[in-house]
Image 1 (spheres, rainbow, N blue to C red):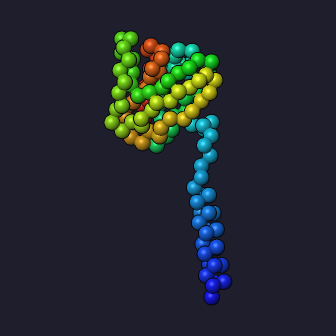
Image 2 (tube, one colour):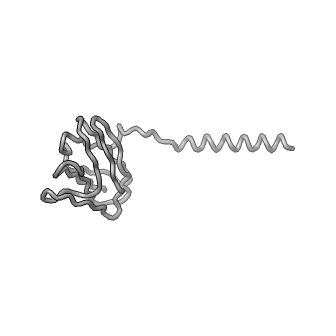
Image 3 (cartoon, rainbow, N blue to C red):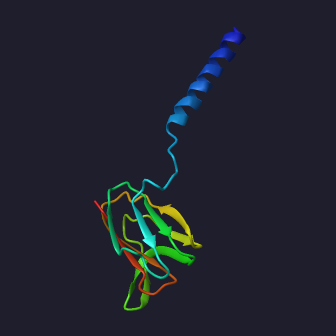
Length: 126
């Protein structure tokens, strides 16, 4: 009786592990929509992505960037998280990349570099 119970528990445990492993996704950012950053600018100032997407931000140069929710307006930083936007506060040390998001709500969201004046990115989510 105990052997059957133990065998049953082992089988259920293995099935749980196999089913859970099927839900693991590759964390690679290579297939994500990507925006490149230069020394003090986003190389494109806007991008349109689909609802539920994450966004890969790629720092192409040896320049530090701190990307956050908000925008620069007339040379003045305006930190602000729009309703439905993911909270973003990501530091890039140079020659690196990282995904932000996911953007689960349709709308227009603003990101900016807190270090570089007028470095703004508009993310349109459809």
